[in-house]
Image 1: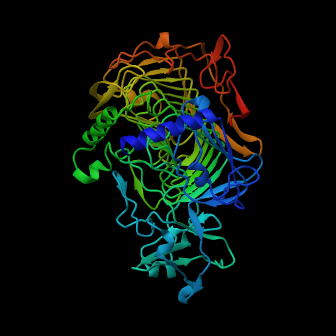
Image 2 (image 1 turned 120 degrees about the vertical axis):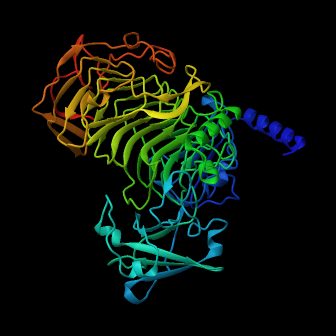
Image 3 (image 1 turned 90 degrees about the vertical axis):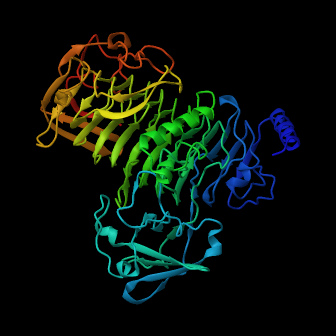
Length: 603
């Protein structure tokens, strides 16, 4: 953009700001040539996204919108944000897919559909390999494409023969359903998809194929203060989101500040559901390109980001709340550095990595790098590969009041975080509750219902000046200087697992241990009912402990010399329990201000 164009754009922006807020309406019956008001709505959300200015609202009416919404403008601040919303009481779907109906049945029960390549535009997911740093393809190529039968994704295979004679694939969702498979061949003109739909006739069912790499994502960086509310968003051909790469996601903010993503249903993403992560110019899959030490590559990305303006004024401070996120094969929510100062709460994240066709070091319900001062609370996370993975630089973060169960590897993983950080009032009920490859964490009033894996790490990784992205220094991880106060540890019977504080027997620095109780694992029952999730712990009573823990009792983290504070600098205080109730002067170990848990509503 030349100087003249920039000046004209600035004048145009100021003129629009002075003109007052506009509400644009969008309907499948509209026209993108229309004015966009209630009487003459636009047809596509993206047409409104090219018009909406700070303070404007885009109201979208019932229907399926198969498009990539690419906002051109963002808001100015919280009082002048741009709101994208589903009309009240109406079902609005944004899909990255297109219907495919020209199926023909051939030999071996294999169905074939031929899609002209021109239909895909400049992105054909059947030619795009899933790839990136720390991605494990298990020895064969995976594509970003997906084929859906009645919104259930089929499994990709590598050849026609596997479509004709499929074998069940080890899968946590539906091993029997894993015989519904697809394979594609692409030539200069056409993409030919071969699929096995079992007993279903795809000509009579809803069959959709992914066409777009995302559903709601600005190609420009710094599109700030946008709200996305009330949509069903699904079926994007998303790419693997390494922390050293641009992280796009089915919904993504692209290196911006102040987004609110709320009250949506986000599902069926090839890799990531929501991304609040990194952009490309600070490094894009550096490790795969140069094969240096992975820690060195990420430190370089971090320093590049600081030089590019990664700080509280410019990046982060997003709110993600009250969404349901599921059927994503990498993460429900990911973010490298862009998750700093974020608040994530009230979300149900489940069934992440259920097909298990590929693996890698970036898979979790929530996977954040550098979540400085992030506050993650009151989420339900179940049936994911990992629950929450706080990787690198989670200094000042707080994870509070979350319910975890039936996660495969662990509920909570702190990796190379120097602290201080706080983990309080959580219920961790998977077989492995905690991996702690960090230091100076305060674990307060939790139920740690599974095993613990604690270890040091020789990588030299950053620690920060208090409440900023500024790097104070680098040091290795000691897996010590923790605070374990008023927790309940359940002891399991797996011989290869470590339970309770035995995991810290060789800690390099002292650990503060007060008011904890340990018991053989009781009978734990989780009931999912129409009115919520209820928890009963039978044959168990919590012990009385001293009440009202606060940051003054916790001291300072040894390395960073930073107090245990909230993001606003106030002292952390444990005067509330998991339910939000005021704790009594004499309270109990664990997350509840109660000795007995019987049929308690926990979500």
